[in-house]
Length: 291
Image 1 (cartoon, rainbow, N blue to C red):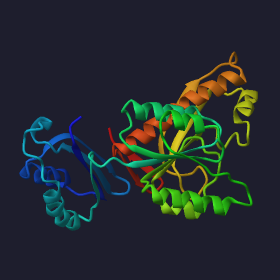
Image 2 (image 1 turned 180 degrees about the vertical axis):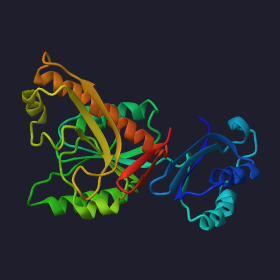
Image 3 (image 1 turned 30 degrees about the horizontal axis):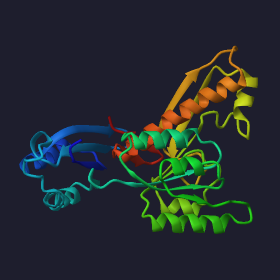
């Protein structure tokens, strides 16, 4: 893959925004690969994602490299004039991701396989768990493993150790791959819109330790999974991705659990990939996920 730059924008909506941004990129010789935009008419907001090649026309390695620093300096006054919030990133800078889990390993195994195959463009310098079930899997992929037990009496100490570990490894994104502990508001505040969680979509109808058993007893016809950013309010952060599967009276609890785990793998991997590809913008308690 050729190196690319991605510009994410949100600002008050007005005429000519697309032309102003694309015009500047054209003037500076950018070869735009993808562009997408969205308007929230009720709130009067505009959102845009632009991706362009850094290696010249068609990503050719021998072409003159795009001056990303020069673009940033030229774009800053325009962004100020249009009251834009903006993020400029390059694919050459791979985000550093910490994976957290407890005893269920299906999401962890899926993410590590996708990372090893090159689907997830990131670095994974550490895996953290309050159990040792994932230790052998971490060793197989050659990733350092940190066992940090958590109990009601050691929760503060455990989080302090986790935060120190994340700082040591310069972590950009935390992925809760079925990590069955509630993070404190202080922890969440350290990583705004940078902690991704996954869970079943029965909430709030079926809570507790055995939601699939409760759903089966109720005779539900759809099961699902949700991936979202973590906020201080439990399981209430901006939703990134959801998916569902239809079931019938023939399906037993074990079938629901198996299908639910498949859905969890899918929605979590999509959410992580879209975040790494800089396709997500948060506003309010919602997300814009660009194509």
